[in-house]
Image 1 (cartoon, one colour):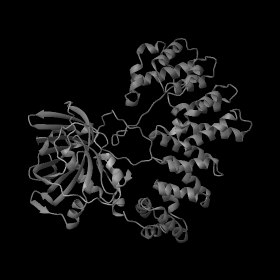
Image 2: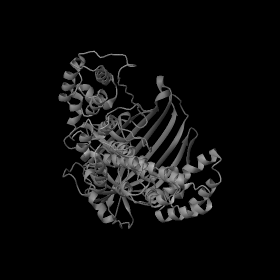
Image 3: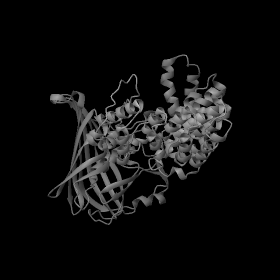
Image 4: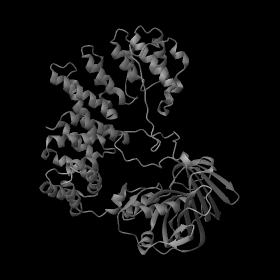
Length: 607
């Protein structure tokens, strides 16, 4: 999330294209009536089910060609059942919808950015997202009818069809991505091109009608059915209808700019935890009651299970000054401070910074738990990384520090492709490289353990450690290096980018005089970056392979890749041909090296 001021936000409204596909006139406000209803029922059941309806007025204020604002008025919420409709909205409900205008960037029909005020509740913003998604027209002037569109439904392949003055927009919601919102410490790979098996089947159609480039009306219909029970016309189904109709236009009344913080977001549906939503204005004194209740209940697992997540969410909302106040109070209140366990689960910049400040003040058990927790931060910031890398040259450096900080480096670099040029990454590479420069022939057990940890840390670091590839290769290539260290060094190549020089791996594999374990590990790491030339080399070696151990592993690996359904291995699978396995090494797996592969697919998160 980006927080910006009113002046800087104008950057997002600069036109990105010169097309005049639409005809909204700057200085005018277009007045729409809107109506939406959502009904859920059993398929085939007539007169049952229930849902709600929302209707009111929507103003589309055209401040500039690409700078528009949406303002809602006269909103009414109805609860709908088979017995009729009942008004449900309160003054607070209407005020929340009408309080702020929503500024957005409108690039030739595409809503590219939203710039809501920080005070805008998530549910209000999602209502407005739904209306803007119906207004959006992503069809380019070139007439391309199939494209990818971002709206409240997700990132969806979308088909546009022109029918006279009407424009039909269709989406198969099962093909959409960014409809799930995982919040987990698990390291997963997103399957962007894979069609996930979702519990909900959905279809969306919108018909837009224009007059002189201005939307006259739009009608959208969305159907969602629960897959497990939807066979033979049975099961649960929800239908969403949305309509907007233009009532006219008038001169724009100048909008007085809000002197508040804004944030930049998009049309994707945005969730917020209920705990966070109810506790947006928390202070230390509010959280202290939760701490007090936890202090005497660690022997009551069920009560702790309820209170502990609450504490984690609460401290994630506190500023640093309030968190420090809470910490000081809890030290005096509790024999066992619940914050020792809650802080590593928080994972916000404030919580992580606070843990770094207190590392030297907590006991060794808590200190190691805190340091290990760094490895599970899904999106570390550069500030976090600076503090973490400083630990590598402090008195607190140990196994937990080396392994956790290096994993944190990899997490950072996955999201920042130019991370190798950043100071904390360069400092970490320098520290690890210094150990490799001292040589990989340990003179005692302490030195051996240090090398083991550094090599494992380099493996964790991945792209952040790419500058150490040549040093790592020298360490592994020397036969004077103990075999155990060579194997760990080879495994350290597992995340090193393919554009780095990895030729040493194939050289070791081709050397039939080399230790079979070294050859197998070299082959396996080399195959992380497969090319046609590399596979031809493997084919040639496999034909004359003298080692049954090496041949068995290579043959079983290639065989399983050819048979796999793992979408992440599609690239290498396409390059493999049956003639690659010209020599049969199908040997007993209990006697010879064998490759086994297992992949877990999460349908919920499409990972």
